Image 1: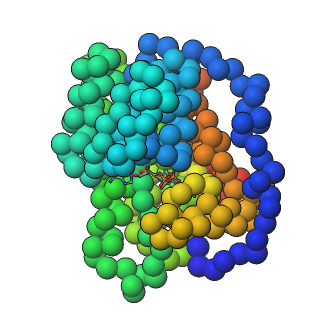
Image 2: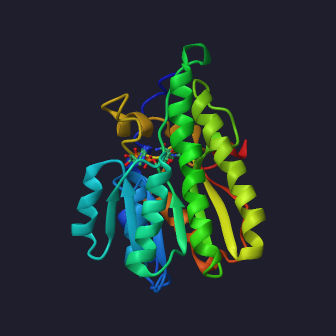
Length: 271
Ligand SMILES: NC(=O)c1ccc[n+]([C@@H]2O[C@H](COP(=O)([O-])OP(=O)(O)OC[C@H]3O[C@@H](n4cnc5c(N)ncnc54)[C@H](O)[C@@H]3O)[C@@H](O)[C@H]2O)c1
């Protein structure tokens, strides 16, 4: 995102609360245990809510202490604070799912961070900090999930990727590289996981109206919403729209889908 595009009101015209009114609030995840990272807000919080509503037992992890509020909003959800870049966090989180619920069936690798800088201004520390969360963290959680899932006959690993998983994002060297790494990790997980009954898929999200850029800009949601024009659909996504795709890929409805990099980008990468 190099320049500020013209303002638009298109995003306000999509109401996720009514658009999904006819979706079955089914119990398709009944008996399943899920672990969601980056769960405190945005896409991760929406995903926890959908999984919980549809019957899953959920462990919700985030670096932000406010993740604990989910336990009050969604009774039965187990919340944890931790940094996904630490091996200890991954083993503690998967261990919590096994201890509390007897195993792990679904991992949603969603925690992520970004950085907008030209290549020449990107420091080695910048690079490492983005790669650590988006690539290393996802790897650590997937590895731990594999260990829990293979003794259980399988599972589903879904990751929140980006259009930057497949195309370059100007001033996003570290972010694009990290989301590209996440896509390649997904394919390897699918190859190694297939014989174990473990599926792995990635949702390549377009621009989503969240607080994702909050550490850089106080107007994160409005700024992201202003990128409506980059999508042929003429608006940005609401977090629920990405959470729905993550849940589809975590569900038995996608039983023959693995190794997929599925765009949910309003057509952005169709060109
Ligand atoms: N918002 C967008 O436009 C957009 C577009 C494409 C992809 N994505 C991806 O969607 C995912 C969710 O982003 P979002 O838009 O909901 O933003 P968000 O900032 O609201 O949510 C990200 C969450 O990840 C958590 N997190 C970050 N680093 C962490 C760490 N080291 N350990 C534990 N938790 C950590 C944050 O605390 C936050 O709660 C990210 O992976 C992001 O890359 C977002």
